[in-house]
Amino acid sequence: MGKNFTASRTQLRPDARFESILASKFINCLMHDGKKSVAQRVFYDALEQIEKRVPEVSPIEVFKQAVENVKPSIEVRSKRVGGATYQVPTPVNAKRQQTLAIRWLLAAVRGKSGRPVALSLADELTNAYKREGTAMTTRENVHRMAEANKAFAHFAW
Image (cartoon, rainbow, N blue to C red; front, side, top):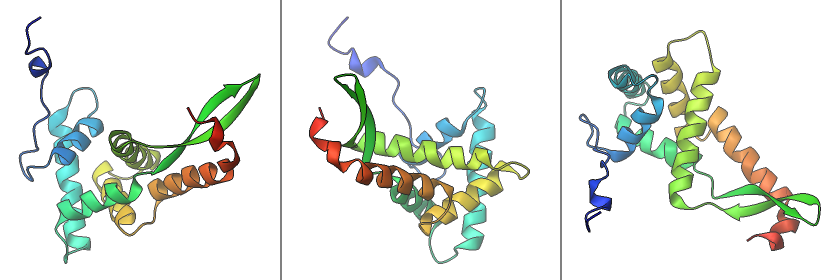
């Protein structure tokens, strides 16, 4: 183990079309069974659909804003205190915010069946850009839960 231990890990490269690390991360999360080219095609097809629906803004900006809108600022975590379990509201760090936003967007897309994934993804991203849709509902529910359990904030670690 030399001093370059952390440098030996593989770095995430920006995607080919938009040079965006976030897009690359999203494609990797969208990928199923190691089929990256399929995930890329789905993602880029979705962005082409977004370009048709929201022509005044570039599709990658719509995507970035959609992820930004879905990011939660606070979440609840279970904490056991003296035999009772409390839902304690805690702030969310930036990396986890991004992870949760991507996870919720993909869960919303996968929850809709009967349509091509690219179209569902385009719908969900467009809705999240407008602060609507399933992923935004999930975020609002998490925030509502944290607000309701504000009384237990003093248990936060």
